[in-house]
Image 1 (cartoon, one colour):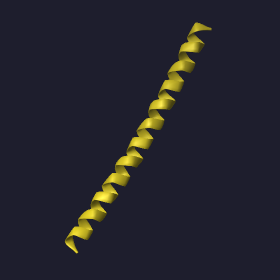
Image 2 (cartoon, helix red, strand yellow; image 1 turned 45 degrees about the vertical axis):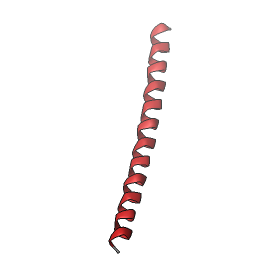
Image 3 (cartoon, one colour; image 1 turned 90 degrees about the horizontal axis):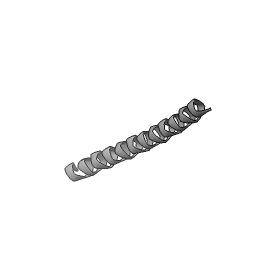
Image 4 (cartoon, one colour; image 1 turned 30 degrees about the vertical axis):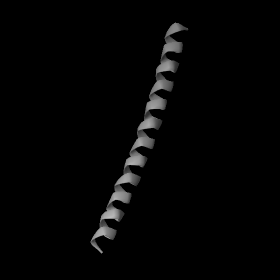
Length: 44
């Protein structure tokens, strides 16, 4: 019983971590996109 609970907790943490990674990656790419857009606008 105890080990099952632990593995569920670990799986839950891993899932949360993956979701956070995904969000961070998306934010990172959108920030890069905005930086590119702003740089282009400044050059124009």
